[in-house]
Length: 335
Image (cartoon, rainbow, N blue to C red; front, side, top):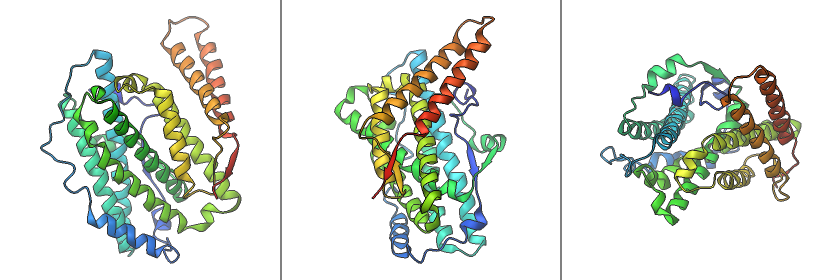
């Protein structure tokens, strides 16, 4: 049931590991006060009773085959993404405990708790659609991608913040347009997204605990690399799922604009540089990337011809050039 919703491509959620021994060397001296405050907030567990296992998650109206596929694809990819976070945080917690860093181990254990709840809730929504997703088996079959610790700190901060903005913007839209809320799952996004926001704040503290990662040429390069890669992935994913956003009555391009703008603003808290968005050049180049992506997808779905392989190669090169142009858009200092 899940194969059609989890095909292997660049936008597919993946499982990760990192330099755990290096993570154990994290120095909290300069960030101890903020670290302890966030740990206490996580221990409080504001969402302890939020994910009610008895709450019905069945859709409230029928969908056509294409609409149903769009909703199910959203659920599958979101569920796998949350489970990926759970596995990474669980492994970090276990290994940091072995490395005698109990405070770091406990923090990752609490973040793993949150990610497990999110994945479980999405899995229940999938079961109501008649889809059984064996997450442990899936994680055993899919390859594990290794990232340096610096990449994990930058990318997870952004993924948590962008997740927060995605959830909260969908929730705000449905509050104004309740007629588009076809599934009860969306009613849970408000408190849910606060978990994402807290996790982002935690990774900001961890990032600031390694000041060499946000200074000089290295900090500028990492800021550009990860803002570009996360925004590019988000824009292409939104373009690929425009049927799903249409179900919610959301203009996919404007939603992407809002998420990128808000996440870029959040990145000022953690990164030394962010993209300059005020002049509109970044979003205009993003539009050219999405156009090239759509053209490539359309060419792949078209009838087979003798010229099709060359045409697809040309379109791939066009997409690569446009994506590189997006990476080279102007940036500005965060402060």
